[in-house]
Length: 164
Image (cartoon, rainbow, N blue to C red; front, side, top):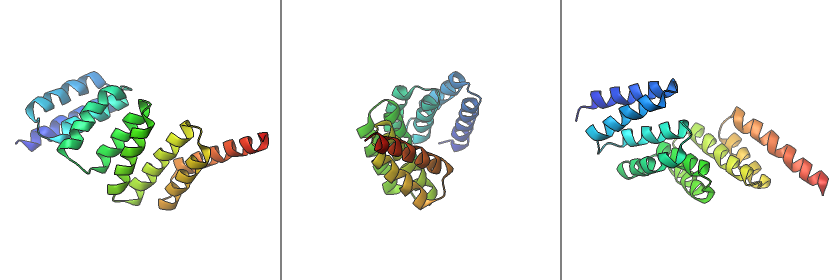
């Protein structure tokens, strides 16, 4: 297998994605799939590209295939959870975030995952649970986004408590 060719294709596709030229990135990654069908990277990166181009439904089959090819990968689980969340499948998103936590190898990764779980609970108007996960995020690592989210959820909780 020509890993240097695969790496170049992945890098080229990521560059196109960063330029928001998703169609060209997609073409490159689909070609990579044809040439390297047993490698998880084209599948994973196609999933990420589809999420970034606001097409999470298209992302899921590729992320799920990446998971089959490379099980127990925190990044794959996190992106899959995010895609499920964007598709409105909150329970599946929770399941995949739990899988991601099980193999997260750094405080930074755990902080991001906890923050994302908190955001799902926030979207569901479950503010006490959202607060719990934002606090877990901050207990792992200083995370500006989690701190801002915690401030927001506390504001909502205060508003609800004043209304009662």
